[in-house]
Image 1 (cartoon, rainbow, N blue to C red):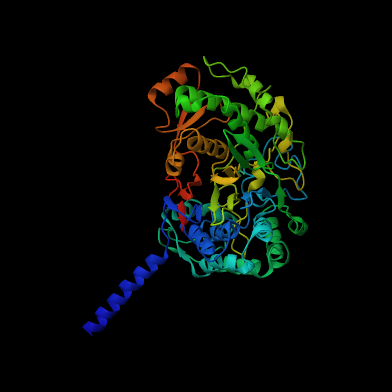
Image 2: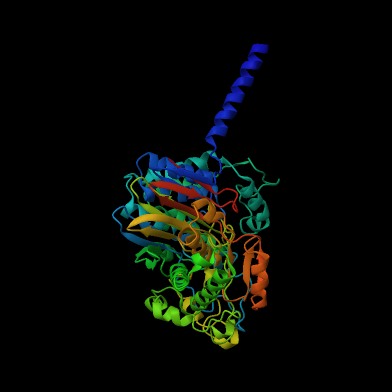
Length: 566
Ligand code: GLY
């Protein structure tokens, strides 16, 4: 009896070791020689690495990791949202893929206004009317179809299906989020038994998602048709309608991901390749870098008073232009070349004076309120053994998007419609100058700040970088690039370095504790800069390739960020 007891005990011990071993851990920093992936979750990074070990390339790894994130990181990983990708091939070709959500056919400019022209609170953030036509499944499939190496599409979704079907132990951060949004889940999905429990979620609880596994299996078997047509599409239409929305079956059928020419700017001998509209990220990042290139910030030093002042003033100007000129270029002429023109950018700084902050009203006529954007997005960076790289940012917009779950199919729908300007084109009355560029129109893509970026030198990958963080995405990516190129930081230090952010309006420099010395703070305040300390800016995931070594870093600001590779 005693022997049986000891045998059972040692079996249980060995079993628990095995289970523990199989659960990947969140590792923030790693170097490797061949391939690397950094994502917001250990499972997603493991799946991506496994795919590359099996001969898959960076696109295969990215696609597999994104389906995995839809299971293990449901607050932002998704099949019900959209995103952007920059792809760099081993031959040196760069391409952007836009799989941003679109406005439904029945959407119109004043969709979220009451009869007096006022924005109806929460209509563009909660429930069915907040949902844009999802792009993720079409985008991931388009990337794989054009660039994937693994022939079998199903193989890329299999790990996600297994994690959904068998469950996985949730992290502390995930438990916190699931508890925090319980009331919203109940409101829009009273019968859901996956995300809603009587007791509180805690770290280590198993999240089993059988209906999501079934949906993923349909996508694995049928490709995008399994999502955009047939029972899944019908269930989306039904649930959106039931929750007050307007997506039609033909909106889903007509959805198309689009390959686009990326924004490409030279910066101190490097080529910075980033996302064109419908994201504002690439244009704004390009403007920031090109303005900065005119100043010796390396000599002035990291976050010195002069460096900071130039960066802040560049940020103000880039965000003023963003507000005025950026929107979906398929619908509205975005003057990309002019916005990135050297003379234009030099001219933009002619009213800058070292003595004091440039007043915001001199940067754009009239009053203006910057559209509030969500911080809940997720980024994945990948480099494979042949030098192919992918930088991909995806989102549901807010945490768990609109909070609407597709009944019977187990996935959240985005609330991306909130990224449109609800009250465009009436500058003086409503303070939204230039917002016509981002006004709602049927089939149009809403403006984004997502900035998936790849930096190359002599045609080879130097840096793959991106982050969640709404408008702070752009300035976080900007700072990580400066940290590596101007301030010679390694990848880990460049990611962890304290950050700051200015987005024109509100007229303030948000900064993380420790970002500036007291002397710099005092000096900036004397020059009429308004400073506001915030908890964290961006959760950067980046890979640097130097001397044939890949160095990856997740962000210590985000508990589950994980680097994996070999
Ligand atoms: N939903 C946030 C963004 O696209 O920038």
